[in-house]
Image (cartoon, rainbow, N blue to C red; front, side):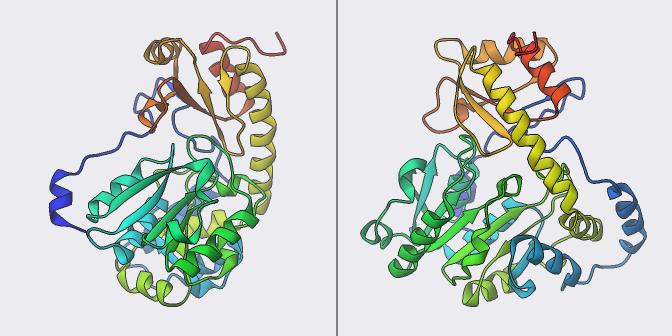
Amino acid sequence: MDPDSVRTGQRVPHGGETDRDLLDFSANTNPSVPDGVADVYEAALEDARRYPDDDYPDFRAAAAAFVGCDPDRVIPTPGGLAAIRLAMETILEPGDEVLVPYPSFGEYAREIELQGALARFVRDDDLLELGVDVLEPCSLAVVCTPNNPTGDAADPDEIAAFAARCSEAGTTLLVDEAFLGFTELPSAAGLDRESVIVARSLTKLFGLPGLRAGFAVASGRRRDALETARRAWSLGTPAARVGAYCLRRDDFVRETRERVARERDRLRAALERRFDVAPSDAPYLLCDVGDRDVEAVIESARANGVAIRDATTFRTLDSHVRVAVKDREANDRLLAALGVRTGDD
């Protein structure tokens, strides 16, 4: 990390509501957790009196099975963002250039700037079409799938083709799959290329954002660099135990995917009566409120007991909000708070 860049860096706004009296639709986390999580966490507390096994064999095995790779390619991290930072710390030097999608997760540019590197912004829709000549000057390219906040997932074949061009250009590809678990799409971990690093978050799919558990997947020298650079005891014992347990809950994952798909379609159909809503493969919807005042829409929802995300903090979005997809009862409360009638009315 570049000390000069740290001194001039800034924090990035995120969703997440601290007021417990509000129903939080600003953060895209599962409203449900797998049965048995509390028991696993409680049992891990006694073992937390000792340092965890820094090899994390059970967590690596569960993560590897979940994304389809060998366990030794898994690098445990305290959340997906920690995997992103670790990748950038091991790749970037001051002055390096990085291709970053927009509108997308604001932490990419921040983490790049903290390394003293330079973000080159490319529209999310255009990023995977870039050729070798554009890639060659860049040390790193970032892909977010499904993209946050738009919700569109990249075609796996297009990612594979882009990864091949990155490899030819000598550019590392970082694929952020924080929300991919909500889909049936395969992980880029299956590409098994030395030029590809995958970042995964457990806590969104399994409804435990405060747990801080995630991992990176890499091969060859990139894998060795991540493993060497990661912090010792990079996951606490409760996070490692609960994370491994959740990753093996196949029924929970299947039911979550089915509910999100069903409720996302229903929610979008209702919201389109008032807003322009982008298609999504993710557990959230991006809404263009048109000529309405964004702040007024947000405050009106808060007055009705619901927090939604101000999406104008994302690059180029100036009339947008983002809402999570939760269970039917909560989604109906969101619609009521926004003054939107459901098809059942």
